[in-house]
Image 1 (spheres, rainbow, N blue to C red):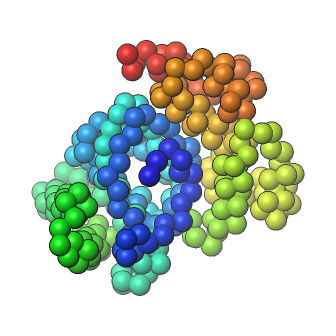
Image 2 (image 1 turned 90 degrees about the horizontal axis):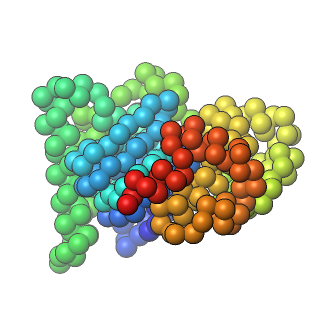
Length: 281
């Protein structure tokens, strides 16, 4: 799995399991706004990771853990290398096994200085580490053990980290977001080209003005801002992982306005592309 390719995922079962579980390494990336039709848990093993969601920025360090609910628009940035455990549980699976799932929001940020909270979060981390060990060693009947851990994980988050959805009025429903799935997929495939509002509105089967209004409402940015953000995510990846010149990188990812690029890049990362590369030396 290359996390840098993710814009929006529909998680599918793998290896006879109903969830996606990976141990991944990130050499440096910026992932533009996206969402999942799943509950996503990121447990950072080493390095750092910046997660932006719901107007807040979370700077994760080694041994930090974050949970991202289905339908929550978020972006991530890895400045240096990191390794992390990724667990994604499809919404269909949650609805099947978690009582009142549609009325639930899960959060690892509640009462963070509370002893009981820290104890319960430690249980979550232990489960994730045990899952990782099973995936690495592939013991006999490992899937049975993994499945047992998965249900223990669900029990823990439901018992200790559930918030009634009435207390969280910012969650987008899958039905509301589904109309933009073709938009994000089309953008992913065609971001190197010029995409007009009329063109992308047709993909969503909406009138241009209505599309613009709804896209900003749900994504928190205009479509043009999103399109440039996608381009910047690929440019950032190449800045980190290649020695190509900036001009060639911009050209390969469809960014024709250099002045605008520098303005957006500095605003987003508070530094220049050259300074990003210097940090890696």
